[in-house]
Image (cartoon, rainbow over all chains, first blue to last red; front, side, top):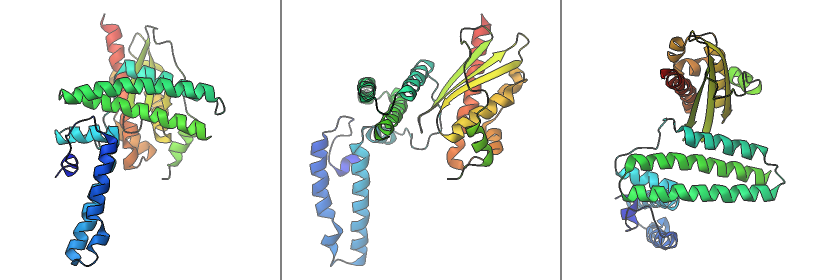
Length: 166
Length: 127
């Protein structure tokens, strides 16, 4: 049973997160190991395994990138351990400029950091919309490329967070 | 995770950091990125008319191993011919810097950066 089947939802990129959480809670209660306190050792072990599978599935599907990678995985495109490099000069040049911009931001300058955040969110949203369409159209190679690009955007987001926490 | 002494040396004293004018006819630019960790690397080679790499510069946003890998290759390629530089393998970089398995992708990134720069060189000189 795959993650989508477990929650009885369609294997699509767009997921209703509130609905997913409700489904998760219900399954969690049904599978909780405490309910198997008087069960056989084998059933106890199974309950523990199912719970860990459930948690794994929930965390994968809740995260947009994890979900997209999982969908591609179901279609036979494995991105989990890839060591491939991205060679898209235009995108990478923009990444370099982004990194330079982040490097020049001062930790205390919240106005500039906020501006960077909203620019980053806008660019991320464009990529996510492309990804959604590519997944819907089963354009798997392009979808994989969009996922790779989104990973760079996430990295930028983490760099900005680090600045805010500094 | 412990970095090797060579990685730390290149990380603390990176060689050849900087940039050339990418529009200059003798400059070849390679840009690569590693999605797994979000590292971005720009490698530039200054190549003579005779096809010898006279100088190299890099700028890398990434972890210590990525910076060390790119710093190392800028040292290695200087004085090499375009043909010789294209033979460089990531395994040589990983071995020299004693990179652990989880950091092998940093050496792949550096090898791909050279290849991308040499592609740019070919493109510029094809016309």
